[in-house]
Image (cartoon, rainbow, N blue to C red; front, side, top):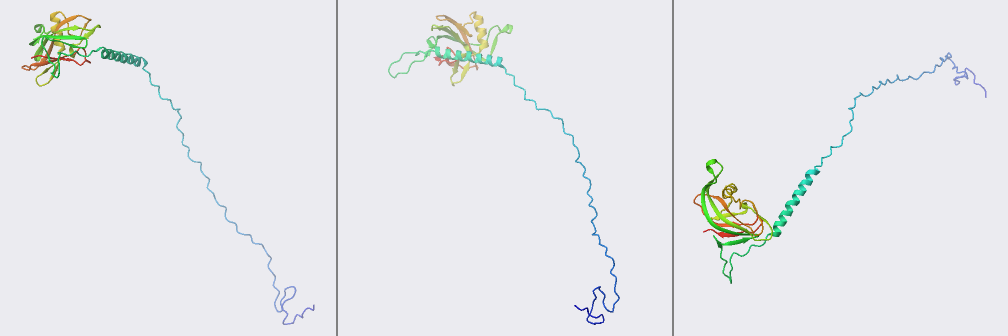
Length: 246
């Protein structure tokens, strides 16, 4: 290939880069530019978390064992057993009350009166008389008892008609007035009455089979109020028998 003349207007360049009519320019030396680098990232030094001391560990103590009051439990068990045996024995030995008076047909039985013997369980009762008093015992020495109202005193005879001993409890005896109000016995007055007679017969007395005792039962009733009937029992669990007092 023929190199074009240098004066050829169509010729623009020379192989060495020279352009006709221009002074060849020197290329500046090439210095590779360094890429700017980012400033180092400052990471603040992390502080350790604050230290909180832990409370001392105490192992959990087991709950205290309850004391077993075995002595008390055994005692209560024996006491309950004895009470149960006594109740069963009294209920088993209690005999039904005998009829107070014989009757036939549809006629109502006649109620027992003063002087008539009546039976309840193991006892036969007879009310022999009735008296009244404001006070009993030796009140001059301060040893007697004075009624709030007036004492109604039943003079009774009690016989054990069974084959076993039985305790006569005066607190199981009652009287009623005309309004149907019920009165229990005055135990302190009974003590004075029966002690004065030297018998202590109807105050919580143990009566053997076939034996008979005599004594008094005092009831503190309002003054002027009369007892119209008595209810007598051989024990606190018996049905009782009624005696008309007027």
